[in-house]
Amino acid sequence: MGAQTVVADVADELARRVVIGELAPGDLMPSVRQVAEEFAMNRATAQLVLGRLESYGFVDAHRGRGFTVRDVRRAGGVEVYRRLFRLSVPAPELAAEMFRDIVDTERAIVLDALLAYTENGQGGALPELRADLEELENLARAATPDHARLLAVEVGLVRRLLTELGQDMQRAVLNSLGELLSEVPQAVEAHYAVSADLHVLVWQALLAVWESGSGPSQAQLTLFEDLFGMYLEKVVARFEELVLGAPGAHEFADSRTATA
Image: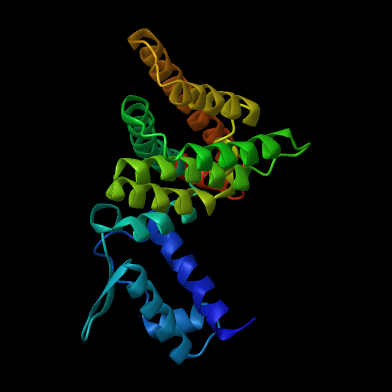
């Protein structure tokens, strides 16, 4: 195992302690000497570990005092949130709370894009959308669908719509959310709590509307929004099931109960 791998692994372990609350905002992080002793490394490597945590945005350095834990949930940006989510899986309550926030944000972007394109679709993106949808169909037909690739293709479909609509900031946020979700296998699997075939059918129906140029009725739009909301509730419920079975999840839940 290389030195950089050791630094990354130990930094992730210390970051995980911040995520699950073992180290609270304002707490003093273990010193270079303490990190070196606990993880059986030399002090130069331990210093690199703490420097890595600072670059992650998890700690602040103070001359003469060492490193203190930042309030990462309050002050962190997208990259901090991305690491928080990945490390939160052994803490099912926290992971589920974060996942709901993520899919609510994703839902707002995707739904707005679909509705806006339905109202204002210019048609120029349709050939590319059709090609993406064909790939989605092929993936869904596989005996064991590749959920990670399915998610990437669906994010790509929405990205095309946002590009056509000129919504660059929403596209940037969607890209970040896609990367964030792709790093957590349970989040990817949960996205397909409803079969991949149904995802394909929804995209086919939307594409038919866009190609017809006639547009759906208000009642159809309302029904679509309601179904979209129900689907995301299933996604969140499936994620909760998956993280409760993750390594360390029950131990974390037991410790929370014992200290309550």
